[in-house]
Amino acid sequence: MKILLTGAGGFLGKQITRSLLMAGQNDLRLHFRSRAPAGLIESLQKEFPQARLETAGANLIARGSFDAMLEGVDCVIHAAAGMKGAAADMFANTVMGSRNVFEACGRVGTKRIVLISSFAVYKTDAMKPGDTLGEDTPIEPVGVDKGPYGYAKTRQEHMFLDFARQHGFETVILRPGVIYGPGGGALSPRVGLKAMGLFASLGNGALLPLTYVENCADAVARAAVHAPSGSAFAVVDDQIPTCRQYLDGYLKNVQKMRVVTLPFSAFLWVSGKLVAYNKKSKGQMPAVFTPYVVKSMYTPIRYSNDGLKKIGWTQRVPTPEGLSRTYAWLKAQLPR
Image (cartoon, rainbow, N blue to C red; front, side, top):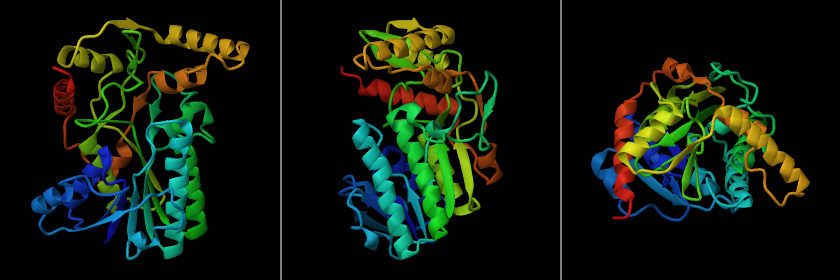
C-alpha cells in the first residue's frame, strides 16, 4: 500500500513516518510545505534501507496545485494543520488546506483517508466529574465556543465527513489528547498558564490526557492499516498523571516557578465574571476563558483508549519513561 503523509516535517509527522516504517509500511510519499528538514530522509533511509521514500513539496493553501502529489496513492494520512498563530491563519491552514486536500483526493480517486483530529472536537461541557471520554463521546456541532483551534479542528472534521459522503472515501479519524515529548511544548493550557511572573495552576486534580509522541504515532500507523472504515479513536496513553502531578514533575525536574493554584470552582466563577465584563466593555476586555471552556477543559473526567487496543495498539513508551525523557529535554533547552 502506498501511503502519503501530509505534514511529515512536523512534531507528530516525523514520528508517524518512523512508526509506519517500523510497522512494515515501506512505500511512503512524504509531504513537506517546502522541503524536508536537513538530514531527515537520509537518516530514515539509513535506518530503514528497504524503504521507498519519496518527498513532495506543496503549500496546501494553493488550491488545485498538488493533484500529482496524490497520484498512485492508496491511503492519505492527513496530519498537516495550523497549530498556532492568528485565528485566521489557524483556520486557513487547518480548514482551507484540508478542503483542498479532500477535493484533490476526490478528483484522483483516493481510496482511504486517515485524519488526525484532536481532543478539542469532543463535546465535554456537560460531562460530570468521573465521567469517561472515549470513542462514543459526541463531537461539537460547531465548536466556535472552544476558541480558534477547537473551532478549526471541529470544522475540519465535519467537512471531512461531508467529503467522504460525497466521494465514498474510507475514513479513519484519530483524536489525540495532549501530545508531548522531546521537541514538543512544555506546559499545556490544561495544566495552567504563565503570566506576570506567576504560573496559574488550573487543571490541578484533573487527569491530563497525555499521549507520548511515539505512542500517538504508533496509534496512527496501526489505525491507518488495520482500522475499519468509519472508525474514530480517542488517543491517550495509560497511567496518565493529573495536571498537578505533571506540574510538580516539571517544577522538580525542569525549573522552579512561583505557582498560584486556582481551584475549579473559583476558576468557573472567575470565567463568568470575565464574560460579564467582556459584554460590559463591549469586547475591549477579551473573555479568554468562558464557563463553557472551563467546563469543557477542566472538569475532572476519565479517558478511555479501549478502541485503539481493540485494533492491536499497545503503548510502546511507558508514561514514566515518556515524562522522564520530556523533562530532561525541556531542561536542556533552558538558557544557561
